Image (cartoon, rainbow over all chains, first blue to last red; front, side, top):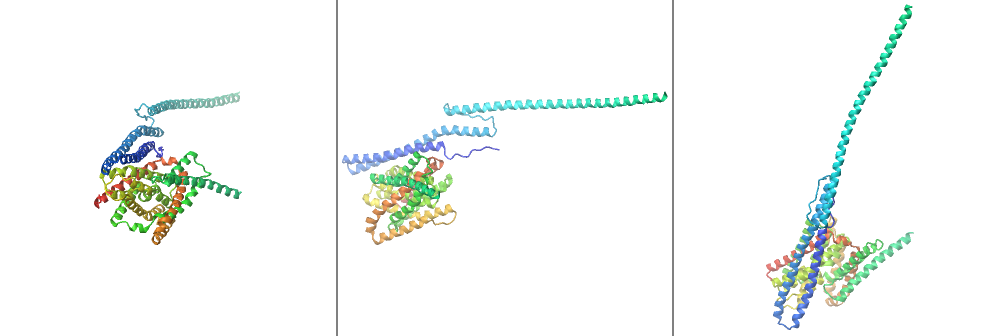
Length: 195
Length: 344
């Protein structure tokens, strides 16, 4: 039987991505709306020419919204990188556990990170090693038990043989005794007749 | 024994219903107090509902009330919403070339989101709700379509939140950036917002927040142009509702929602044709709060029924991708169409 785990309904990676995205997107939305209003009223208060306001305003919008869009992509990129550093080792651990469940006792996980996930992987490897050692001992004990069993069987067979032999001899002796007794009786009977 | 059980059930339903009504009314009140076109009472009510549910946890006793509220308030909202928004006469006023562009943008919106839903393995209900919410009219389209596609509270919440987020980023960041970058005219910008922005309130906000564009058309005229485009998009529901309901059922099926929507829209159009002044000055100011409050209560109940963990599931991430990608595809199509029609 091969053990499998159902795919998860939600993933840490997605949750991290959503959290990062929500923060930057909502932050960007609020900042842009507020900045646009503040900027427009400040320009109008200065009593600047309409063409200048339009020109500067257009540049302002390109920069503020463009930076927000760039920020969204940058944050998503960072979120993907960060989430991979967490979910990658977890996925390796899950696969390792499945391998152990499916009897591949020599499975070990290579995680180079020095954080809690690295510790978890080291713990997993220790556990796997311990299980493998114990299993090896059990195997050795099993083999030794099987050897002893064979030895025992051989002894039993020898004993049986000896027993059979001993019993056979006894039967023969009884027979011989009976024969001797019969002969004795015969001799005695013949002597009586002669007398 | 039977009687006391009945009384308990009614009591529990009333308790849940009351909470939904209070939150729905609060959502509407926030909208009225702030008077901001960005503040959509449906979205506010649903977010408050989700927060309350997360704080109080799952309460099986009052849950029936949350499930019951949308059953009453969504149909009421549909009737008044259709009278208000499904106006066939207003649609006829849109230029043919523009109408063709709007139809193409709408088709791309739908097709792209449906395609993404298919390749990402998204739940059918969520895909259909995101496509109608994005291509037609945000929270209202999601509220109308959800009973037709048999969506549960989690489907509705996930879809609505994704569309809201895409709309907020779209109206405040993407559209101003593109408009300023390509230096498009005020007319093109209002057509763009009327074609691709998901929420009616945000279409108004987009046009009011117009980013220093060339062209001398007055702001009121631009707003009216954008709103006429937006009004035309409501017609998409007449196709989307039976199409998606049939796809969910696996056979041709016309849900009751469509009949209610169509008949109410025809009544509204007829009143508009007979007495336009009465329609605009008396009827609309009277019925708009009714559908806003009805749907706010329904959305509050949907939020109260939603599980926040579901919102953070893989379906939530896929929904965000679908809502944003649909918005980008529709915007790109609009620009290509405008370029071909030489309206730049």
